[in-house]
Image (cartoon, rainbow, N blue to C red; front, side, top):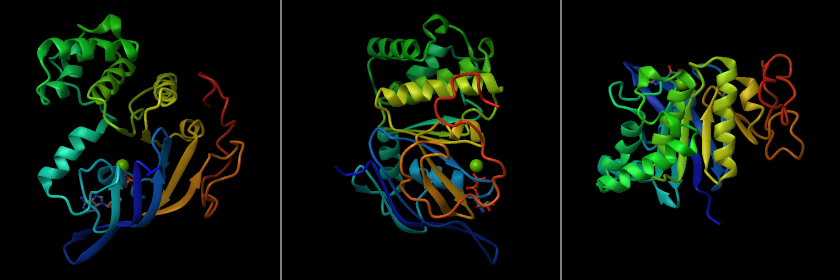
Length: 260
Ligand code: ADP
Ligand code: MG
């Protein structure tokens, strides 16, 4: 079967005056429907640049990116935004909820843009909030929710229109470690239900619980496979992490609360 995501020799350069910044220096990978992948790497290694391209917010300088078999590289801005609206759900570090709207309204918004009738919107938003464990908080506004609950609302919003791919850039960056673990457990639950999920994280303990980890350094893929400690053959192990220090820990099977 054709992979959901197929990247071949993708580069992204930025021109800064007469200096060329190489944010991505040529990355190749494929991701199948239903995979859960963590993207890790030090600050400046190209993670957000890669997520922007994956999410059709940006296009490569060179190389090919195919999403569900469709070549993304040559698309016009209009076609790109249509593709993005149909295929991608985004979750951000700072939640990006409408402060004055309640959880229900925040989650139904993507359906408003799709002209889904009101009654159906309300029903689907309610079902999605139930799905993320917030059925009892539908009428709470953003400031009436905890950080973890806000991120759950954001996940419900990202999924309500049934995208084929969920992209999360540092989704736990603003959360305490217990809540980080709780949100990771939600992603794992969605993964088991068949969603395709890509998460950028700085937390080795979270990446270690994802079945596949893509490690970036200087715009290149340093390694791509199961995290250290996960049983089974590595898919590709191009190199060991250069400066990751001691092994991040127990890896799979480390249940909630065991982080650090
Ligand atoms: P990460 O998310 O891993 O911290 P980024 O993808 O944001 O890394 O950045 C990768 C590299 O590209 C960095 O050196 C950064 O300074 C550079 N970069 C990112 N965005 C831009 C931009 N809009 N203009 C110029 N350089 C950029
Ligand atoms: Mg970033």
